[in-house]
Image 1 (tube, rainbow, N blue to C red):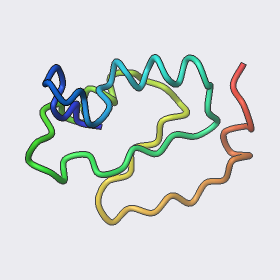
Image 2 (spheres, rainbow, N blue to C red; image 1 turned 90 degrees about the vertical axis):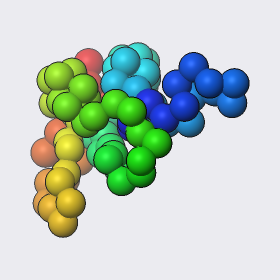
Image 3 (tube, rainbow, N blue to C red; image 1 turned 90 degrees about the horizontal axis):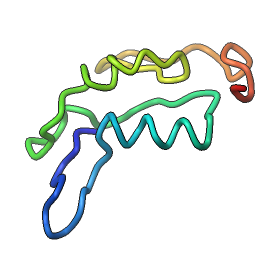
Length: 79
């Protein structure tokens, strides 16, 4: 996450929220846990852009937070 280097000559290094939406619409994961958001200074898109997607499969954990759910909590696949 973070849209690092978006549009640069090397290509985008990390996903933007829009890229994440397109990917999750294709693969329909039961669970998606974004990591490393906000941990590097080259990230230009805040995690709030991912929160705006309002996708129940995307679980955003804050630093130090532990995911205690299971795949069955979210189902094995979305329809």
